[in-house]
Length: 186
Image (cartoon, rainbow, N blue to C red; front, side, top):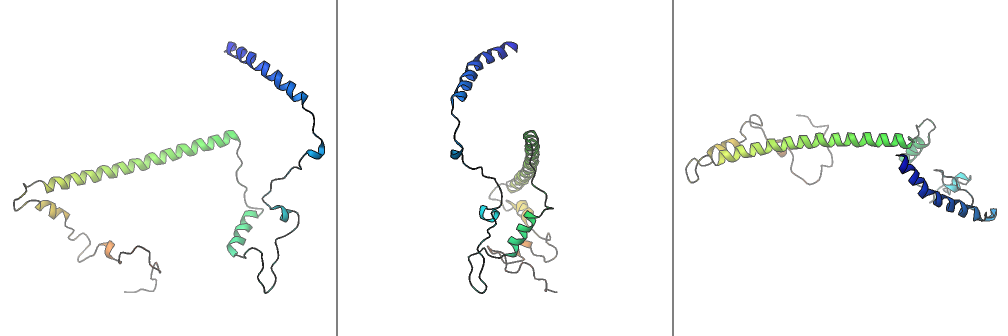
């Protein structure tokens, strides 16, 4: 361990000395060439300087932003002093947060894939059983596929004289204009 440290310091020492000498040879710039520092703010520069957006003329078409109540509410809640600020995590806390989040997402994906594989297994088992019923009798006989046809009948599973839920409304590609008729009575 100590030998790798000394070999690394032997490699870095000449690089550091050339870097130091190049920094010392640089000439300082004049103050007029320095650009003013810009502060980062969520408030646009004209608004921060005191100027506001162009005002609307009463009774005429103004050039200002549209007055939408939703936008006002969003701005109010975003800029309200009691609104909690977004979390600013240090590198280690952000790394821990990311690691825990990825572990949770992996656990969720494993659970969902397990459920899907179980459903696929049950479906394939039912499909194999139906295929076995269909091929039980030799083809060409009177009873060929009889048990399969009986198994596929849906008599009595929707109640007496019932209808499958799929047929409760005409099949359309778009939802109805009124999702639920609250005034309907029997």
